[in-house]
Image (tube, rainbow, N blue to C red; front, side, top):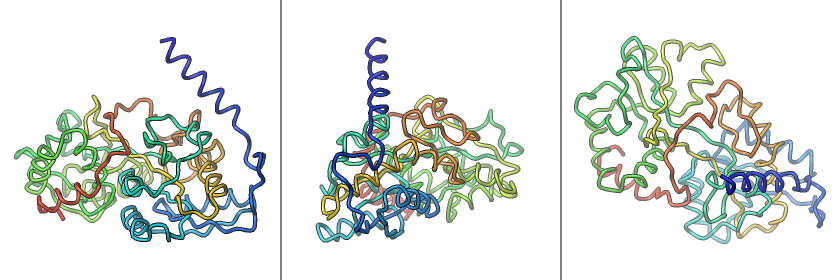
Length: 339
């Protein structure tokens, strides 16, 4: 217990001791324009960049795309990449760039802003937001008492044609990457083959929720914020469905971390590090919490949007985010016939 208390005190002291942006020892250059490869929600990225530019005077050009699309582009570009900073929605894309050795170490002051388990273990990227896997279900068709005990149970024959997945999406592939790390390739492949037999395939998380809401299926695997976002608006596609959180460190309780990293090839590394630090800072995390992205804040002491089930009440499995294997996930999904 003393060790835990000492760690918490040390982290708090570290955060308090952080210098404010613009008060660093070496002045930041303001006549540069950073390039941000962005796979996060565009409105959130724009809000972060706008506030950062207002605070520092440093301009940022945003190039948006999907997680693995941009990760693979950076790998192809190598040292010639124009990107200074890369941010994603899910962790596996960060691993693709990190395992290619293209990230610079994140400044220790920035890493200290986020609990260590929510960043890369090697320190080459830092968590900037998070999302949790849930099972959205229609209680009139599937009461909570009948939701499968584990996400892995959905591969059993009794679940045929009763639930939905979106296998082409980065979100679902991130969930598979967690299963792969936790259970290994043989179990993961068998699980995927079961899903191929049982699941109805949809184009995305929102389509799954809508189908469950209409009673076309009993439930489906999605990320939490689609439901919260719809409820915050009209509730048209979520009024008949509820969220179920798998607990007990089940793979279905996986928390996927959105990461950010600075490229080794950046020609403006100090300014790039400051942009990343801003996203993880109290000010950056407040922008996230106040936004309609409805993702979890990950900064120490930074509250998430009040409508969300607190991150501290979840019981996710322990996953080494820097070791998620996106290429093998794709290979296994192709072998199972899901891609």
